[in-house]
Image (cartoon, rainbow, N blue to C red; front, side):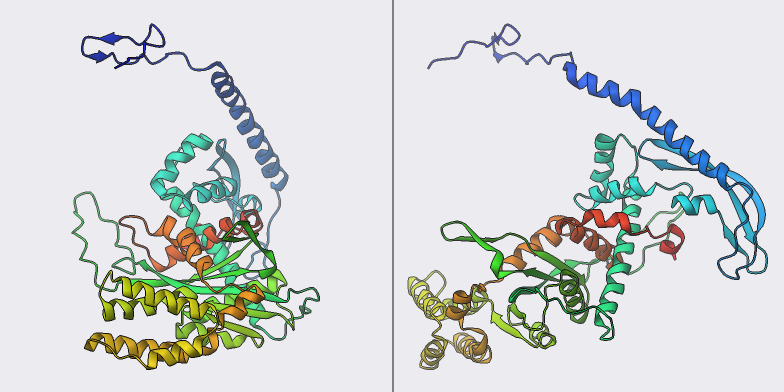
Length: 465
């Protein structure tokens, strides 16, 4: 066998094989240049930031604010230096504290103008930490913050940033849903709305915490007892909707279809809320006009079809692959697991359904009888399922119109919105914590992260309450 000679004198063959490779001790020159520039200018940026804060504090000295509760002039109480963490280090401000004696309201106008809280992180840094927190677990996000931004924080700081910003997004989203649910709002209908919109809706399970409320922190002398076992069925359903335009479907390669853009909506809770949010999103996008057909693709769940009636002009489509899956279940019971007869029979059913021959399929199923009791029960369920959804299974016509017949878009959305971040090994969530994280992930996946700059982060006092 031929053996390659060593590439350099640094790596040589020893008696027992290759020696340990020698690691270069010199850091590449340009990496050193970059780090030197960062070390040089970071203190200067902190110094300039501190100067601007001092200028604002000096300009407000001598001003007496009025109380936000009773509109009375407030009294000076003290002036304490307070600090908070920024991208470039800690910044300190002499924030004057004012007190309203009648209603005991306290205010620090300088901190209110800056939008910061003492001992916490600034809004700009919080948004960067939240960006990491919605992509990776909080412990890893804290490590990445040091590597990316040069700021040392712990996992709790990242978690708190996600909670406060996520709550701000949730409050805005709820207010937007209420606004568009009001029939008296003054928004005119869009004149250039698309002819059709595809709406895919589905749900997936998310593991929840055993306790709805967090356990209190114990002292060092006390030991936390073991967590109780997770009860069966301790899950909640995350409902997700995907909005897309049929006119924007493309075929990047033969047999493969994609869309130029999609808009995601999600909610951990009841079905009414997810449809309220879908309605509000359609209004914000200006996609829903008086003549727009809303094409709703679902797996047959009643919570979907019962709420689809909110769209007067709609086309309901039963997910093609879910319909075939039901046929597969009967075929396996009828002919045996892995049977070639079951494969051929199911493929014939799929071809007839795709060709729009649902009546023939139902007539054929009515001529069959199950070989076992379980097979007969599954056959009856299949006939009932196809009969009840017959008006949603004209697949040939749906394909001709370009609507699509599968729920692949929403299945993919589940993986990106929920599975990739919230369904990793051992993860359990509170309802509030999961919903706030989902709200931020939607901004990121919808390409709307910059919108977060227009929302004011929920204060720590209100968040704790």
